[in-house]
Image (tube, rainbow over all chains, first blue to last red):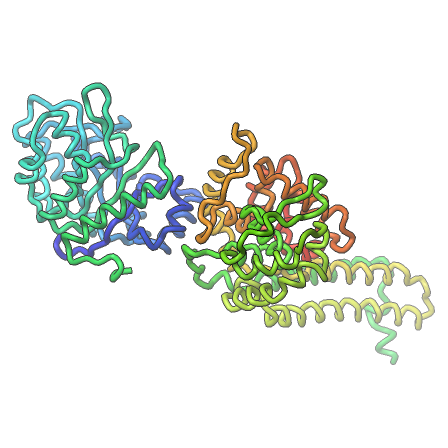
Amino acid sequence: MQNLKKLGIGIGFREQFRADIFLNQDKIDFLEITADHYFDANKSKSEELQMLKNHFKLIPHGLDLSLGSAEGIDKDYLEKFVELVDEVKPEWFSDHICFTKSNGISIGHLAPIPYTHEALKVFVKNISVVKKRINIPLILENITYMVRFPSSEMSEAEFITKLVEETDCGLLLDVTNLYINSRNFDFSWQKYLDNLPLERVVQLHFVGSHKHGNKLIDGHSHKTENEIWEVFREVCERCDVKGAILERDGNFPPFEEILEEISTARNYFESNTNYSYTANK
Amino acid sequence: MDLILNNPLASMYGPYFLVLYSVAIIFSAIFLLIVKKMIDSTDKLPIPNISNNVDPFEISYLRGKEEELARSVIFSLMQKDFLEFSETKVSITRKNPEASIDRLTNIEQITLNWLGKQRSTSEVFDKNGLLLQLESYGRKYKEKLENQQMLVNDDIRQKFSAFKWFALLSLFGLGAYKVLASVLNGKTNVMFIVILTVVSYFVIRKVSTLPRISKLGQVYLDRLQMAFSNLKNNTLNLYSTNKNNQQTPQQTTFAGVDPMLLSVGVFGGAILAGTVYDSYNQAFARSNAMSSTSSCGSSCGSCSSSSSGSSCSSGSSCSSGSSCSSGSSCSSCGGCGGCS
């Protein structure tokens, strides 16, 4: 993972941002595309992909590989992912540490798994299937959850550590998810980081959270708050991060606000790495 | 001489020859259409990237020559509050004459100087009007776009012209020969051959009009329209007259690429229908309708002024301007007329 190229700071591509992204190419290092949006792409989506590819480095981010499904990997979905990766030729690709399908039915949600040895075996088996077909690094993202399973045999950090080490995968550390879980389940995110193999952190996700009752929600719809910047800053200090993506999916602000967030992230990113955005442009 | 007057073609029964001649015309037309499709191979070239400093005026020129350039510059000045249309929409008046023009671009300053205190809107498209003032900019853009192979250049036109003349002369020669042979053989009923020869001229002329924009230019325009489609929608929503606040909004980025101007550059002025800038459309529609100098101007204007302007502008055939620029009847008009 250490040999991967540094990509810098980017944004999750959403159609709503399309014009602004092109008008601010000089301020955006790379884009993360939702892989599923380009499977069985019609002419318009194919052209969009070509256009994005011609202008930016792209990283495909999957939603539905369902690496935690005991039934195994959906072969059709995987083949579509293979095609996309062949087309985009990214530095790496990513999906989540969760399951999204059960008995062939998509549940439409990133569902958490119990941190058991059995679940670990399922992940290892599924990831080996994926890695046989896609020969570039896979990085795995931590998710938010509203429940923790009493049947878990280890902590989340332990589970992730075993998972990425057994599968030789990288980590896509969503600092917002980490912060939200730490608040909702009252644990220290610093200690969580202490227990992660930080040398495997490749990419970060960040965005603001919002409150719903007494819980924090990862709605991808708010400005990154100071507490999450604190997590971001510390991760940048402790890890050789290759890239970070702002994930905004709703409540879209004027693009200047997005650029401000990218600029803030860049300051933390560059002050802790040898990477200079301007030198790499 | 005997062979010239006594061969299967010369002695062919008249109606059969007319059928043969019609087939020859159709084949010639198909041949030219194929050549026309193949002669522009710019679609094999890499598509230029969209710059983050994209020039709305250059895109306007690409869509529709000096006419579209003039429309965009006038819109820019209107947006910057330097001019306004009269209530009757027949004239453009300078606003805020005391305001500094230092921050205007050269092309905007030239347009403003030409405008003086007031001009009739029809003068904009007069050959000796604003178009003349913008000619040097048009040349600059033309040269740049031709270098980038976005426009069909003279080299391609000359090559295609050879095929066109070959087809025309072959058909004309065939018709003339049959007429001559018939007359020399004492048959004077040649009117249908003459008519068909004339028809063949118009058919060949129709199919051999090359578009102004090359395949590469069209793909680039399509990409621009895809890249900036939501910019158009967002900006139009912001400036829609359905909003409670009907004040003309201030331009957001004076020195950079303004989203509204870019939208007009990429999609044409028709998108302004139903916005606070609707007077712009109405004025040009009226001037075009009244103008006798531009036969295609009225079709552009009717597109712009149409109450269904928004749906028109979102259609690719209209907004891309391809149908206009490739059509012979509208070739002097530019990008707007595709929706007429």
